[in-house]
Length: 445
Image (tube, rainbow, N blue to C red; front, side, top):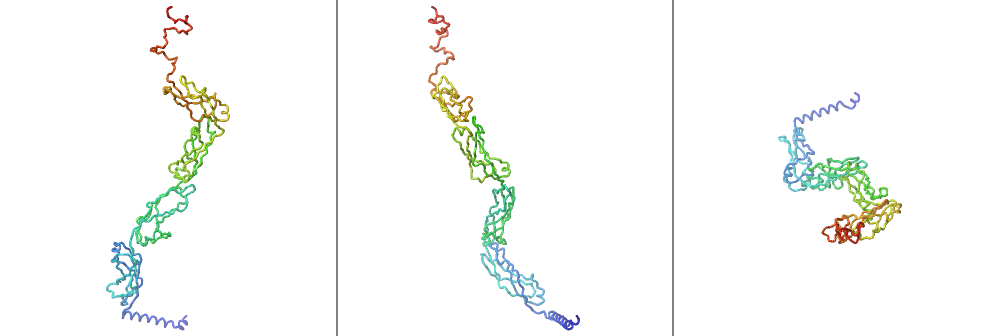
């Protein structure tokens, strides 16, 4: 090692370096020469920003500008100079319209330091834009799917548009405010607060540096509805001897898919369309009708049907016409009937109809004598068929004829003021107890 140090003159070189350093410090300390030192990247401070804001303006580009300068002075002063001791300013108080500007800047060095400067960066460039306010619509992106058996319902945003303030050119880039909500696996409705991002038409975020939000979030409500296939039903009102087992009812559609409040949907096992009267159908001679589909409160449907078609058919039943005569009319003396018979339609099984004859039928008018007037009176009738289990189809009437003068009622008491009334004191010549039929009983011979 010593040999190597000696061969390379290492001790002499080290000594020479030390001597040079000592000589440099001696010269610097005794002479203190003037030197020029560059300073790079000094941040520019803008003054007059309040006046700029009062004019509705803001610096959008160049607000973080920097400049480079050269500082000249004594070595000792330069050694003590720190970057934080230097400030550069640009006055923008006189600017009143938007645009691109270049302005001179001022440099402030520590007072009494004897230091001077020169500009490397000659001017500061910056852009001024107008501050405007704009209403921006909010779009909600729903991601995911609710749990099986549940569907998305209505949604609401408060507010539906947000107010933003900022530079006119930046706000012009905004297409909408985008918020996101994930409904994966949801089984109940949602009420929450969502943050949003301002985006351009391509969906890319807009620089928010100079933008102020009046509403940094929105209230979001989303209905989560339970969904299910619910059958449609009707209540059949049988008629006469036509029983439930003789009636077939087909509903189109048989069911509809509904969605709504889970508490409602989970307890809804059918939607009843109402009642169907077999008697009314037969009297109207129809076997098909439509009824409105009325949904329970709190549910909706995407079905195309708002009405259901009900078709009625009968098992092992047929109709038969029975022609009756006045012999099947109940006696209504002292009145008479205008009709001499009625044609009645009955429905029943083949077996019952084959046994039915006109003699089995009794037609009885339904009326109150006090309500009858002289002439023809149309009244409804009741029809009985004895032991035959058949059902009358339709409604029927008879015409009761009331004469202007009714024959006397033999059971009514005699009117003493009637000159034609029989004398109770005179014997009846037709009385077999009268011994002399040629002479009234009780007269003198």
